Image (cartoon, rainbow, N blue to C red; front, top):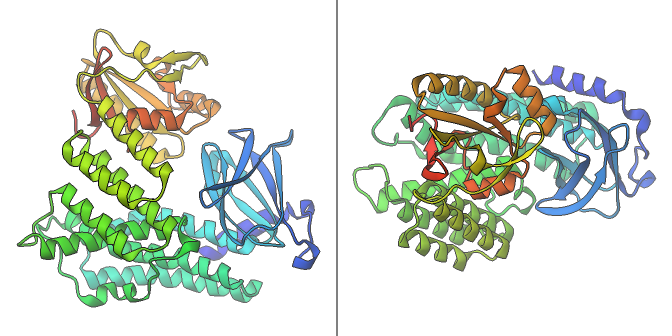
Length: 468
């Protein structure tokens, strides 16, 4: 499975080697070179970040190529942004690294070559492997705990074997590289186990959480809850979210509720999570983004302004040391309050298929109830499903007008997808400023919809699969 993928990447990468600016040894190139070519670019720029901090940006040349020449950078995980997409890149002193990708299949086409390519190709292979195996693992959640563990261990063993082969074929990774490679395997495997009791209950229809032996979570004895190097690494952060949520839930069921009944008091449960992060996580930046995640999750699911929500925000503010996060949560809460029934629809700018700027208030159907829904090009499975679902809803509910708002997609790609899938362009609009739309309309999931009567909000927190 992995051998063939690696060979394809290696062969494709060989075509780029002639462009490399540095030699193979660190002594030949003390700085870091990172560049490459982007086919079908969706932006004029490539922006490089270390964790959440801006490092540099460069403009694509006439041949859609870019290059960074970096001095004195810290070894570790970075990410490059080519709007609307982004992906990881691992950099260290002496690297001379090139990429090639096609934005039509951004992650699938991404190839690294040159000094430093081995760890980066491995990380993208792991990223794609976990994306591909998600449906398989979802089926595994219906299994009993022992059978589930065997399946997950088998998937993990295949990846570990692949990593050992790479070490044998291409020499030793540095200590930090190897730690990152192992983390990409371990924490995804751990994440499946943290999810298991909840997804097992969902898949089997059991009324209570399945009893699990202490050995099921044996890996918890070896995890690092304060790993600074992995703070912004998705597998690790996703694991941390689920692990802390799992422990909070089980502790609350044991000590705060009887009969192992589901916990329905979201304020109570999320206060538990805040307390657990405060007591277990000491790495400051990791603490802050976990606090932020808990606050965002609580407010997005609560939807309604209340004294309880305000009290929760105050608790969050006493724990977080990030002024940016505090401002973001205040803006989110203000957005939620502005989207309550009987309020006016936010007057957000979008573009139509003729590249004209229009406003949402001018888009609504004055004679029918309007339903705004959202889609993005990088979620192709969702896009196809939602397009079919909207067609069904339009037949079932002719009294509604369904308006699609496209997000995180270049304008040319949006036009191309509308033509390819024969969408009614009069009912499709392109969102230029994702962050503005996300915050003003509280886009917390792609199945979300906003229902309006003329320009007045009826339900700003609807769901396309549950509200009709």
